[in-house]
Length: 386
Image (cartoon, rainbow, N blue to C red; front, side):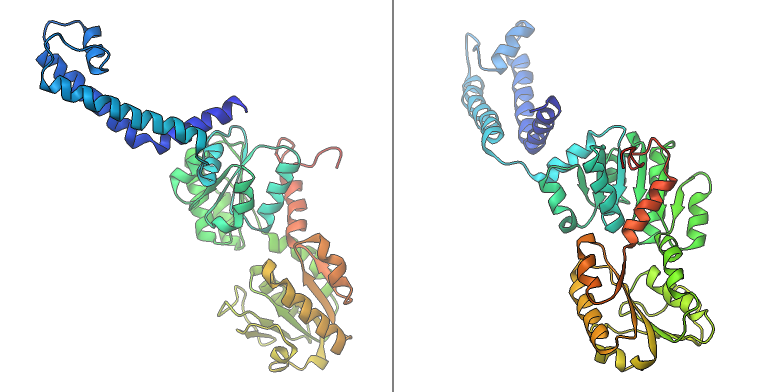
């Protein structure tokens, strides 16, 4: 076991027994102070021995006898309990991961554990790069915590969580949170703690990106949906007919909007969680606020015989079954429709392509694009042997 891990374990146990040790110290201090009063003309060392019950005054009174009775009991219960807890108790992995993050130096801090962040963390682990992670959803990071990785479970906008992630000593920070407000707050607080490190922030709106780039934040902002559209545009360019787009995020909305700008095309956007779109809605863009996983859900709003392209852009891992089912049914009943499916696990490519669908991974593409803009000293910079 390394010295660092030993220190961490000691700190964890001391943290757990903090109240008991404070009480023990205050009890000793009270005894020491009372002996100063009731036993005058003694040396300092003798007062120490009296308070530790190693020696008793020649004419021991009631207080001395009472103190001599209680002190060994408290000492045994607290100190012995601490030692036995050190030997037998299993540490809280969440606290362990938090303190591991606290000791990081010259590392990267990743805020938010979503698909792009997962690829950053996986790359760091594979290449033995030092990192810490802040995520407020404990379920998302259970595996990382159980593997003793440096994870801070908590609100990333709280300063003490940023301090536990050792932001002050970080060499770079990556913020991959969907909520623009939280991303801005995090960036502002991080910049106050660390004025030097590069801060990379995923942000959708141009006005948000412009704000993040300005002093004193000086962040490097990027949009994964814009990067993804660079590849998707070639699929929709010069196409005809109606399109359907299914999903919830900014990329989904961007695809629908881009298609609606093409002449003689209509697009139906199915988004069950939003009541609007970030882009200007026009007469060729039809918004449907419904969850869609069956052909009957689509037929209620659009004539599938007139559809030429379908984009299934769900990004939750739990919804891959719905994506695959809808893809299979579209391929079976409407083979003329070009189908495009977003995936996040490369092992699923063959499964989707069995139904003649094209796949795209926004996180894989985004990570490669992010590698292009980081400096050579970055933890995620491409290695020479890649």
